[in-house]
Structures are given as C-alpha cells and as structure tokens.
Image (tube, rainbow, N blue to C red):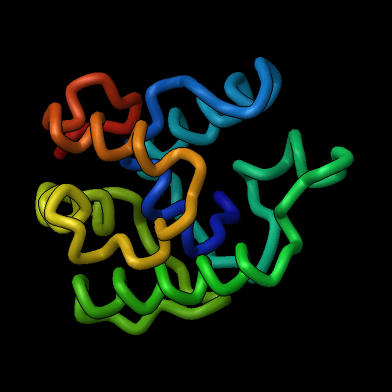
Length: 140
C-alpha cells in the first residue's frame, strides 16, 4: 500500500522526473510506477512514500505547518472533485483519482489552491498547459 499525503495527489499528475535530488527523483519514480500499477493508496497526515528520501534531511519542509495546510487544501479540493470525502486514513485507488477529469481540473486551476506559493508551480503550469505529455503517471 502506498502512503500518500494530500498535496501529493496534485503533484503526482505533473511529475516528469525532476525533484530535490537524484535520490528523491529515483524514489519518486518508484512510487509513480506503483501508482501506474494501481496499487492501493492510503492518505497519511505527514511524510509519505514520496517524502521518504528527504523527510529527515536538513531543511526538509515535510513537517512544516504550511505543508500540512497544503495537504488539507488539496484533500478538500480533490474531495469536491470526486464527490468522496478524503481524510487521513482514507483508501483510494490511483486509477480512481488520477483521471482525465482530475487533470482537466488541475490544468484549469480549479483544484490548485494548495499549490499557492509552491516552488514547483511554474513547472507544473507548463506541464499542464502541454497536456501532461511528459509526465510519468499514466494519462487515463
């Protein structure tokens, strides 16, 4: 089972292999491969499988309140989009959340309130504008 924090339900749709370090990129690729295999995910309230390689690093933001708030905002937006209340402990299948509708809402900005002030936002804007063509997560 993949542990996933709220805002990573947004980040995963634009992951193209870039990240904080080579180790982070490698580990993230492994998580995306599991998502592509439709391995069940469980929402966690803090560092998750994607954070694993950086959560204990100096300067990591994994536990900061602004990131926890980002998780809450993302879960609220995705809950509204899917019509399913997602909270810590909720289980969800990747193919049920990472849909064309999810990508369209991401591209249109309707589920991106959690992305405010994110250092990756400009990259994600370009990826979404290009139709998610270079992402590693399956485009369903």
